Image (cartoon, rainbow, N blue to C red):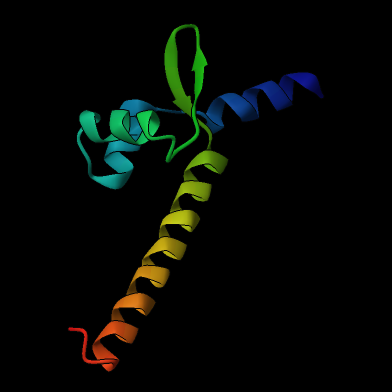
Length: 82
């Protein structure tokens, strides 16, 4: 049903305040992430909203970046570049 889909989508949307609570960050950090296009968002009625898919995608990309960074650091220390 269309009504169920709309309700499910509405429940899935998180506010900027909720995003900050999830990550334990300040609003300026979420603003910077949006400005740098690190996290996707929607503007609905002039308000910022994030889907759970947006948040999960951001988390996965962050994990991949952390793994890549740690891999490079390990290689550098193995080569005496530490």
